[in-house]
Length: 214
Image 1 (cartoon, rainbow, N blue to C red):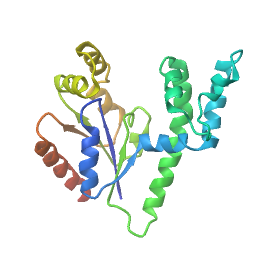
Image 2: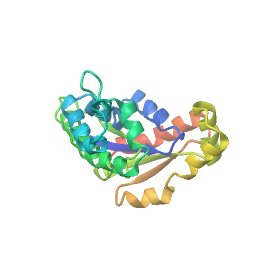
Image 3: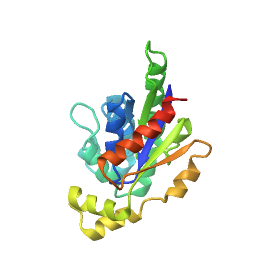
Image 4: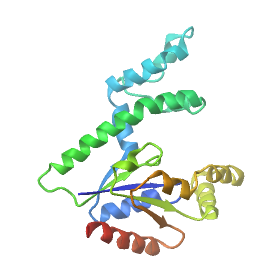
């Protein structure tokens, strides 16, 4: 069973690549869905609330309770409002979430490996695959890229951003060479998505065949 790490900058088409891979028999594990699974666990949600309890000292109790829904699961909107306006809070949350996601991901990988018919390729899809250290456990890493002008246009068309806001998000992305260097000895493949869907599909099928042949 080969583990393919899939990442890519904003608006480059990572989700499209993941969909094409799934259509060709790869088993997908989406890091975002793992986080959602954790946030739906009341025990983990309590750990998140305890992490930020000191932020609400002196305030009303409802401030702390706003981080969870009535069923005890995480209120993602409220949590996002907290951490994305506070870099220290974001780092605290990531220090809690990343190891938990890694454990959950490994459980799912082990279950696949021990199944009667393990898939030949498992795709680990994550925006921060490299930054979070997940890439080190992969057999190969694919990074989906496209021209900055295309990224900017997609952000404006699909997310309603202004040209200035879209360009700012694109320019904030780490460079490709930095990502390539961060994966160490793990093979790194750039999947360019500047052309048509057929162009992208052809590139994917070529690289996927190399993995399956190993």
